[in-house]
Length: 445
Image 1 (tube, rainbow, N blue to C red):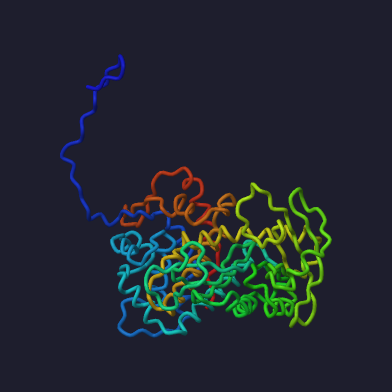
Image 2: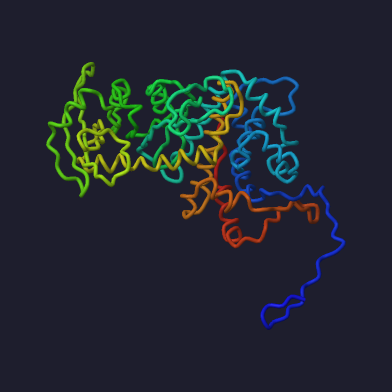
Protein backbone atom coordinates (compact mmCIF):
# COMPACT_ATOMS: atom_id res chain seq x y z
CA UNK A 1 0.00 0.00 0.00
CA UNK A 2 1.30 3.51 -0.89
CA UNK A 3 -0.06 6.63 0.87
CA UNK A 4 -0.02 10.14 -0.75
CA UNK A 5 -1.47 12.73 1.69
CA UNK A 6 -4.95 11.50 2.54
CA UNK A 7 -5.12 9.08 -0.41
CA UNK A 8 -4.18 5.44 -0.23
CA UNK A 9 -3.19 3.61 -3.41
CA UNK A 10 -2.86 -0.12 -3.74
CA UNK A 11 0.40 -0.96 -5.51
CA UNK A 12 0.05 -3.27 -8.47
CA UNK A 13 1.76 -6.58 -8.19
CA UNK A 14 5.06 -6.96 -9.96
CA UNK A 15 5.06 -9.48 -12.79
CA UNK A 16 6.45 -12.87 -11.90
CA UNK A 17 7.81 -15.78 -13.92
CA UNK A 18 8.65 -13.62 -16.95
CA UNK A 19 10.68 -15.54 -19.50
CA UNK A 20 13.31 -13.82 -21.62
CA UNK A 21 14.14 -14.99 -25.13
CA UNK A 22 17.14 -13.54 -26.96
CA UNK A 23 16.85 -15.33 -30.29
CA UNK A 24 14.02 -13.35 -31.89
CA UNK A 25 15.54 -12.47 -35.27
CA UNK A 26 12.40 -10.65 -36.43
CA UNK A 27 12.93 -7.57 -34.27
CA UNK A 28 14.85 -4.54 -35.57
CA UNK A 29 15.84 -1.20 -34.10
CA UNK A 30 15.79 0.16 -37.65
CA UNK A 31 12.37 -0.81 -39.00
CA UNK A 32 11.78 2.66 -40.42
CA UNK A 33 14.93 2.37 -42.50
CA UNK A 34 12.84 0.13 -44.77
CA UNK A 35 11.78 3.26 -46.69
CA UNK A 36 15.40 4.10 -47.43
CA UNK A 37 16.10 0.42 -48.28
CA UNK A 38 13.24 0.54 -50.77
CA UNK A 39 14.62 3.72 -52.33
CA UNK A 40 17.99 1.99 -52.83
CA UNK A 41 16.28 -1.14 -54.23
CA UNK A 42 14.08 0.76 -56.72
CA UNK A 43 17.17 2.56 -58.03
CA UNK A 44 18.79 -0.87 -58.64
CA UNK A 45 21.73 0.49 -56.69
CA UNK A 46 23.61 -2.80 -56.42
CA UNK A 47 23.41 -3.32 -60.18
CA UNK A 48 24.37 0.32 -60.80
CA UNK A 49 27.48 0.00 -58.62
CA UNK A 50 28.39 -3.33 -60.23
CA UNK A 51 28.26 -1.63 -63.64
CA UNK A 52 30.25 1.41 -62.54
CA UNK A 53 32.96 -0.32 -60.50
CA UNK A 54 35.25 -3.00 -61.89
CA UNK A 55 37.14 -4.71 -59.10
CA UNK A 56 37.31 -8.49 -59.46
CA UNK A 57 37.67 -10.20 -56.09
CA UNK A 58 38.29 -13.92 -56.02
CA UNK A 59 36.74 -16.24 -53.42
CA UNK A 60 34.98 -13.48 -51.53
CA UNK A 61 31.63 -13.84 -49.77
CA UNK A 62 30.48 -10.33 -50.71
CA UNK A 63 30.44 -8.42 -53.98
CA UNK A 64 31.94 -4.94 -54.23
CA UNK A 65 28.46 -3.37 -54.33
CA UNK A 66 27.46 -5.30 -51.19
CA UNK A 67 30.60 -4.15 -49.40
CA UNK A 68 30.05 -0.51 -50.33
CA UNK A 69 26.44 -0.60 -49.14
CA UNK A 70 27.58 -2.39 -45.98
CA UNK A 71 29.74 0.69 -45.33
CA UNK A 72 26.95 3.13 -46.23
CA UNK A 73 24.17 1.70 -44.05
CA UNK A 74 25.98 2.04 -40.68
CA UNK A 75 26.77 5.68 -41.51
CA UNK A 76 23.12 6.37 -42.32
CA UNK A 77 21.86 4.58 -39.22
CA UNK A 78 24.26 6.28 -36.82
CA UNK A 79 26.65 3.39 -36.20
CA UNK A 80 29.56 5.70 -36.78
CA UNK A 81 32.50 3.36 -36.14
CA UNK A 82 33.22 0.23 -38.14
CA UNK A 83 33.28 -1.79 -34.91
CA UNK A 84 29.81 -0.50 -33.96
CA UNK A 85 28.42 -1.69 -37.29
CA UNK A 86 28.74 -5.26 -35.97
CA UNK A 87 25.38 -4.66 -34.23
CA UNK A 88 23.77 -5.25 -37.62
CA UNK A 89 25.15 -8.81 -37.70
CA UNK A 90 22.43 -9.88 -35.25
CA UNK A 91 19.63 -7.92 -36.94
CA UNK A 92 17.95 -10.53 -39.13
CA UNK A 93 15.23 -8.13 -40.29
CA UNK A 94 17.79 -5.58 -41.49
CA UNK A 95 19.71 -8.26 -43.40
CA UNK A 96 16.51 -9.58 -44.98
CA UNK A 97 15.43 -6.12 -46.14
CA UNK A 98 18.84 -5.20 -47.58
CA UNK A 99 19.37 -8.54 -49.29
CA UNK A 100 22.63 -9.27 -47.49
CA UNK A 101 23.22 -12.96 -46.74
CA UNK A 102 24.79 -11.74 -43.48
CA UNK A 103 26.44 -8.52 -42.41
CA UNK A 104 30.24 -8.32 -42.81
CA UNK A 105 32.24 -8.26 -39.61
CA UNK A 106 34.41 -5.20 -38.79
CA UNK A 107 37.64 -6.91 -39.89
CA UNK A 108 36.14 -7.67 -43.31
CA UNK A 109 35.01 -4.05 -43.77
CA UNK A 110 38.37 -2.64 -42.73
CA UNK A 111 40.30 -5.08 -44.97
CA UNK A 112 38.11 -4.04 -47.89
CA UNK A 113 39.15 -0.40 -47.41
CA UNK A 114 42.81 -1.23 -46.88
CA UNK A 115 43.14 -3.64 -49.81
CA UNK A 116 41.15 -1.62 -52.35
CA UNK A 117 43.15 -0.56 -55.43
CA UNK A 118 43.53 3.16 -56.14
CA UNK A 119 41.13 3.02 -59.08
CA UNK A 120 38.26 1.94 -56.80
CA UNK A 121 38.04 5.41 -55.28
CA UNK A 122 38.15 6.96 -58.76
CA UNK A 123 35.35 4.68 -59.95
CA UNK A 124 33.23 5.39 -56.86
CA UNK A 125 33.85 9.09 -57.45
CA UNK A 126 32.45 8.77 -60.98
CA UNK A 127 29.47 6.78 -59.67
CA UNK A 128 28.84 9.59 -57.18
CA UNK A 129 28.96 12.09 -60.04
CA UNK A 130 26.43 10.04 -62.01
CA UNK A 131 24.13 10.04 -59.00
CA UNK A 132 24.35 13.83 -58.78
CA UNK A 133 23.67 14.29 -62.48
CA UNK A 134 20.56 12.16 -62.14
CA UNK A 135 19.10 13.84 -59.05
CA UNK A 136 20.15 17.48 -59.41
CA UNK A 137 17.16 18.05 -61.72
CA UNK A 138 14.69 16.45 -59.29
CA UNK A 139 12.09 17.36 -58.20
CA UNK A 140 12.38 20.22 -60.73
CA UNK A 141 14.80 21.10 -63.52
CA UNK A 142 17.70 23.36 -62.59
CA UNK A 143 19.60 25.87 -64.72
CA UNK A 144 21.98 27.28 -62.05
CA UNK A 145 24.39 25.74 -59.56
CA UNK A 146 25.85 27.56 -56.57
CA UNK A 147 29.07 25.98 -55.31
CA UNK A 148 30.03 26.66 -51.69
CA UNK A 149 33.65 25.69 -51.02
CA UNK A 150 35.43 25.26 -47.70
CA UNK A 151 37.79 23.05 -45.72
CA UNK A 152 37.43 21.47 -42.30
CA UNK A 153 39.93 20.11 -39.78
CA UNK A 154 39.61 16.43 -38.79
CA UNK A 155 41.78 15.73 -35.76
CA UNK A 156 43.62 12.41 -35.57
CA UNK A 157 43.99 10.79 -32.17
CA UNK A 158 46.11 7.91 -33.47
CA UNK A 159 48.94 7.55 -35.97
CA UNK A 160 47.23 7.87 -39.35
CA UNK A 161 49.26 8.27 -42.52
CA UNK A 162 49.08 11.85 -43.79
CA UNK A 163 47.73 13.22 -40.52
CA UNK A 164 50.18 16.01 -39.78
CA UNK A 165 50.44 19.03 -37.53
CA UNK A 166 48.87 22.02 -39.25
CA UNK A 167 46.17 24.58 -38.60
CA UNK A 168 43.98 23.10 -35.86
CA UNK A 169 42.10 25.76 -33.87
CA UNK A 170 40.53 23.35 -31.38
CA UNK A 171 43.41 20.96 -30.68
CA UNK A 172 46.53 23.01 -31.31
CA UNK A 173 49.58 20.93 -32.04
CA UNK A 174 47.54 17.77 -32.75
CA UNK A 175 47.89 15.87 -36.00
CA UNK A 176 44.96 16.17 -38.38
CA UNK A 177 43.58 15.91 -41.89
CA UNK A 178 42.31 18.98 -43.75
CA UNK A 179 39.74 17.82 -46.34
CA UNK A 180 38.24 20.16 -48.94
CA UNK A 181 34.49 20.10 -49.52
CA UNK A 182 32.14 21.56 -52.11
CA UNK A 183 28.40 21.71 -51.46
CA UNK A 184 25.75 22.79 -53.94
CA UNK A 185 23.80 25.41 -52.01
CA UNK A 186 20.22 24.95 -53.24
CA UNK A 187 20.12 21.15 -53.30
CA UNK A 188 22.58 20.58 -50.40
CA UNK A 189 24.31 17.82 -52.40
CA UNK A 190 27.94 17.17 -51.47
CA UNK A 191 29.32 17.93 -54.92
CA UNK A 192 32.93 16.93 -54.31
CA UNK A 193 35.44 16.10 -51.57
CA UNK A 194 39.20 15.74 -51.40
CA UNK A 195 41.20 14.41 -48.46
CA UNK A 196 44.32 16.48 -47.76
CA UNK A 197 47.23 16.09 -45.40
CA UNK A 198 47.05 18.12 -42.23
CA UNK A 199 49.99 20.29 -43.25
CA UNK A 200 48.65 21.02 -46.74
CA UNK A 201 49.04 24.61 -47.91
CA UNK A 202 46.01 26.87 -47.50
CA UNK A 203 45.00 26.58 -51.16
CA UNK A 204 46.57 23.21 -52.02
CA UNK A 205 44.16 21.20 -54.16
CA UNK A 206 41.70 24.08 -54.62
CA UNK A 207 42.11 24.23 -58.40
CA UNK A 208 41.79 20.45 -58.77
CA UNK A 209 38.64 20.31 -56.65
CA UNK A 210 37.03 23.15 -58.56
CA UNK A 211 37.93 21.59 -61.91
CA UNK A 212 36.28 18.32 -60.81
CA UNK A 213 33.15 20.23 -59.76
CA UNK A 214 32.78 21.77 -63.21
CA UNK A 215 33.58 18.48 -64.95
CA UNK A 216 30.86 16.58 -63.06
CA UNK A 217 28.17 19.21 -63.69
CA UNK A 218 25.40 18.38 -66.20
CA UNK A 219 25.91 19.90 -69.63
CA UNK A 220 22.57 21.73 -69.50
CA UNK A 221 23.54 23.89 -66.50
CA UNK A 222 23.72 27.41 -67.92
CA UNK A 223 24.94 29.43 -64.93
CA UNK A 224 27.49 28.81 -62.19
CA UNK A 225 28.08 30.82 -59.05
CA UNK A 226 30.68 30.19 -56.35
CA UNK A 227 31.26 31.31 -52.78
CA UNK A 228 34.47 30.47 -50.95
CA UNK A 229 36.70 31.46 -48.07
CA UNK A 230 40.20 32.86 -48.37
CA UNK A 231 41.64 29.39 -49.02
CA UNK A 232 40.31 29.79 -52.57
CA UNK A 233 41.10 33.51 -52.83
CA UNK A 234 44.16 33.45 -55.05
CA UNK A 235 44.81 34.12 -58.71
CA UNK A 236 44.65 30.67 -60.39
CA UNK A 237 41.29 29.82 -58.77
CA UNK A 238 39.78 33.16 -59.80
CA UNK A 239 41.21 32.67 -63.31
CA UNK A 240 39.50 29.26 -63.52
CA UNK A 241 36.17 30.67 -62.36
CA UNK A 242 36.35 33.43 -64.96
CA UNK A 243 37.33 30.98 -67.70
CA UNK A 244 34.13 29.04 -66.94
CA UNK A 245 32.15 32.33 -66.96
CA UNK A 246 31.21 31.65 -63.34
CA UNK A 247 30.14 34.48 -61.07
CA UNK A 248 31.84 34.43 -57.70
CA UNK A 249 32.31 36.05 -54.33
CA UNK A 250 35.52 34.85 -52.68
CA UNK A 251 37.04 36.14 -49.45
CA UNK A 252 40.10 38.23 -50.25
CA UNK A 253 43.37 37.38 -48.58
CA UNK A 254 44.75 40.28 -46.58
CA UNK A 255 47.87 40.78 -48.69
CA UNK A 256 50.09 43.82 -48.28
CA UNK A 257 48.61 45.52 -51.35
CA UNK A 258 45.09 45.09 -49.99
CA UNK A 259 46.03 46.33 -46.51
CA UNK A 260 47.59 49.46 -48.02
CA UNK A 261 44.34 50.25 -49.82
CA UNK A 262 42.06 49.99 -46.78
CA UNK A 263 42.71 53.46 -45.32
CA UNK A 264 42.23 55.41 -48.53
CA UNK A 265 38.78 54.05 -49.41
CA UNK A 266 35.57 56.10 -49.17
CA UNK A 267 33.16 54.12 -47.03
CA UNK A 268 29.40 54.51 -46.93
CA UNK A 269 27.01 53.19 -44.25
CA UNK A 270 25.82 49.63 -44.80
CA UNK A 271 23.88 49.23 -41.55
CA UNK A 272 24.19 50.71 -38.02
CA UNK A 273 27.53 48.94 -37.44
CA UNK A 274 29.17 48.35 -40.82
CA UNK A 275 30.51 50.63 -43.55
CA UNK A 276 31.28 49.42 -47.05
CA UNK A 277 33.37 50.47 -50.06
CA UNK A 278 34.78 49.09 -53.30
CA UNK A 279 37.80 49.55 -55.55
CA UNK A 280 39.68 47.74 -58.31
CA UNK A 281 42.40 45.55 -56.84
CA UNK A 282 45.30 44.65 -59.13
CA UNK A 283 48.09 42.88 -57.21
CA UNK A 284 51.38 42.05 -58.86
CA UNK A 285 51.10 38.90 -60.99
CA UNK A 286 47.39 39.20 -61.80
CA UNK A 287 46.59 39.61 -65.51
CA UNK A 288 44.01 42.29 -64.70
CA UNK A 289 42.37 44.10 -61.81
CA UNK A 290 39.35 42.66 -60.02
CA UNK A 291 36.48 44.26 -58.16
CA UNK A 292 37.13 44.20 -54.43
CA UNK A 293 34.47 45.02 -51.84
CA UNK A 294 35.59 45.95 -48.33
CA UNK A 295 33.41 46.22 -45.22
CA UNK A 296 34.56 47.52 -41.86
CA UNK A 297 33.14 48.14 -38.38
CA UNK A 298 34.54 49.99 -35.41
CA UNK A 299 35.65 47.69 -32.59
CA UNK A 300 33.86 48.58 -29.36
CA UNK A 301 35.25 47.99 -25.88
CA UNK A 302 32.46 45.48 -25.20
CA UNK A 303 33.09 43.43 -28.36
CA UNK A 304 34.59 39.94 -27.98
CA UNK A 305 38.07 39.24 -29.29
CA UNK A 306 37.80 39.86 -33.07
CA UNK A 307 38.44 37.00 -35.49
CA UNK A 308 38.60 39.30 -38.53
CA UNK A 309 41.58 41.34 -39.70
CA UNK A 310 41.89 44.50 -37.61
CA UNK A 311 43.57 47.83 -38.27
CA UNK A 312 43.38 50.93 -36.05
CA UNK A 313 40.23 50.00 -34.11
CA UNK A 314 38.43 48.63 -37.20
CA UNK A 315 37.65 45.03 -38.13
CA UNK A 316 37.53 44.28 -41.85
CA UNK A 317 35.91 41.87 -44.29
CA UNK A 318 36.78 41.83 -47.99
CA UNK A 319 35.73 39.91 -51.10
CA UNK A 320 36.87 39.66 -54.69
CA UNK A 321 33.85 39.37 -56.94
CA UNK A 322 32.62 39.68 -60.51
CA UNK A 323 28.94 39.66 -59.56
CA UNK A 324 26.87 42.39 -61.25
CA UNK A 325 25.31 43.32 -57.91
CA UNK A 326 25.28 46.29 -55.57
CA UNK A 327 27.63 46.29 -52.60
CA UNK A 328 24.81 45.19 -50.33
CA UNK A 329 23.82 42.49 -52.84
CA UNK A 330 27.32 40.95 -52.81
CA UNK A 331 27.36 41.11 -48.98
CA UNK A 332 24.04 39.26 -48.71
CA UNK A 333 24.93 36.75 -51.45
CA UNK A 334 28.11 35.73 -49.65
CA UNK A 335 26.36 35.54 -46.29
CA UNK A 336 24.08 32.90 -47.83
CA UNK A 337 27.10 30.63 -47.54
CA UNK A 338 26.44 30.40 -43.79
CA UNK A 339 24.22 27.39 -44.50
CA UNK A 340 27.37 25.46 -45.42
CA UNK A 341 28.59 25.64 -41.82
CA UNK A 342 25.52 23.72 -40.70
CA UNK A 343 26.03 21.12 -43.40
CA UNK A 344 29.71 20.66 -42.57
CA UNK A 345 28.77 20.19 -38.93
CA UNK A 346 26.22 17.56 -39.99
CA UNK A 347 28.80 15.74 -42.15
CA UNK A 348 31.28 15.76 -39.28
CA UNK A 349 28.88 14.65 -36.54
CA UNK A 350 26.19 12.59 -38.30
CA UNK A 351 28.13 11.12 -41.24
CA UNK A 352 31.18 9.94 -39.25
CA UNK A 353 33.68 12.27 -40.93
CA UNK A 354 35.61 12.58 -37.67
CA UNK A 355 35.77 8.79 -37.16
CA UNK A 356 38.89 7.93 -39.17
CA UNK A 357 38.64 4.17 -39.84
CA UNK A 358 42.21 3.12 -40.79
CA UNK A 359 45.86 4.18 -40.58
CA UNK A 360 46.31 4.31 -44.37
CA UNK A 361 45.77 7.58 -46.24
CA UNK A 362 44.39 5.93 -49.41
CA UNK A 363 41.89 3.84 -47.41
CA UNK A 364 40.72 6.93 -45.51
CA UNK A 365 40.36 8.84 -48.79
CA UNK A 366 38.17 5.99 -50.09
CA UNK A 367 36.09 6.12 -46.90
CA UNK A 368 35.59 9.88 -47.42
CA UNK A 369 34.17 9.07 -50.86
CA UNK A 370 31.86 6.49 -49.19
CA UNK A 371 30.69 9.24 -46.82
CA UNK A 372 29.96 11.44 -49.85
CA UNK A 373 28.00 8.57 -51.39
CA UNK A 374 25.97 8.02 -48.19
CA UNK A 375 25.31 11.75 -47.82
CA UNK A 376 24.10 12.15 -51.41
CA UNK A 377 21.90 9.05 -51.25
CA UNK A 378 20.15 10.37 -48.14
CA UNK A 379 19.84 13.84 -49.68
CA UNK A 380 18.37 12.40 -52.91
CA UNK A 381 15.91 10.29 -50.88
CA UNK A 382 14.95 13.31 -48.78
CA UNK A 383 14.46 15.65 -51.76
CA UNK A 384 12.43 13.27 -53.91
CA UNK A 385 10.50 11.09 -51.48
CA UNK A 386 9.92 12.88 -48.18
CA UNK A 387 7.34 15.58 -47.39
CA UNK A 388 8.11 19.28 -47.78
CA UNK A 389 8.25 19.91 -44.04
CA UNK A 390 11.02 17.29 -43.73
CA UNK A 391 13.34 18.93 -46.26
CA UNK A 392 15.27 20.86 -43.62
CA UNK A 393 15.80 17.83 -41.34
CA UNK A 394 19.35 16.81 -40.61
CA UNK A 395 20.26 13.13 -40.74
CA UNK A 396 20.09 13.01 -36.95
CA UNK A 397 16.47 14.17 -37.02
CA UNK A 398 15.60 11.80 -39.88
CA UNK A 399 16.88 8.93 -37.77
CA UNK A 400 14.63 9.85 -34.86
CA UNK A 401 11.61 10.58 -37.05
CA UNK A 402 11.92 7.68 -39.49
CA UNK A 403 14.96 5.40 -39.66
CA UNK A 404 14.96 4.41 -35.98
CA UNK A 405 11.27 3.49 -35.84
CA UNK A 406 11.31 -0.08 -34.40
CA UNK A 407 9.86 -2.88 -36.50
CA UNK A 408 9.18 -6.60 -36.46
CA UNK A 409 9.29 -8.95 -39.43
CA UNK A 410 6.42 -11.44 -39.33
CA UNK A 411 5.06 -13.95 -41.84
CA UNK A 412 1.29 -14.26 -41.59
CA UNK A 413 0.11 -16.79 -44.17
CA UNK A 414 3.79 -17.10 -45.16
CA UNK A 415 3.83 -13.53 -46.50
CA UNK A 416 6.68 -11.33 -45.15
CA UNK A 417 5.19 -8.36 -43.32
CA UNK A 418 7.11 -5.58 -41.59
CA UNK A 419 5.14 -4.36 -38.58
CA UNK A 420 6.25 -0.90 -37.49
CA UNK A 421 5.61 0.61 -34.08
CA UNK A 422 2.36 2.57 -33.91
CA UNK A 423 3.39 6.09 -34.95
CA UNK A 424 0.89 8.73 -36.14
CA UNK A 425 3.63 10.23 -38.32
CA UNK A 426 4.34 6.96 -40.09
CA UNK A 427 0.63 6.18 -40.42
CA UNK A 428 0.09 9.42 -42.31
CA UNK A 429 3.17 9.31 -44.52
CA UNK A 430 4.09 5.64 -45.10
CA UNK A 431 2.01 5.11 -48.24
CA UNK A 432 2.90 8.53 -49.65
CA UNK A 433 6.63 7.97 -49.19
CA UNK A 434 6.48 4.53 -50.81
CA UNK A 435 4.35 5.91 -53.65
CA UNK A 436 7.02 8.53 -54.38
CA UNK A 437 9.78 5.93 -54.14
CA UNK A 438 8.09 3.59 -56.61
CA UNK A 439 7.67 6.40 -59.16
CA UNK A 440 11.45 6.66 -59.53
CA UNK A 441 13.29 5.04 -62.41
CA UNK A 442 16.33 2.83 -61.90
CA UNK A 443 19.79 4.32 -62.30
CA UNK A 444 21.37 3.48 -65.62
CA UNK A 445 24.80 1.90 -65.67
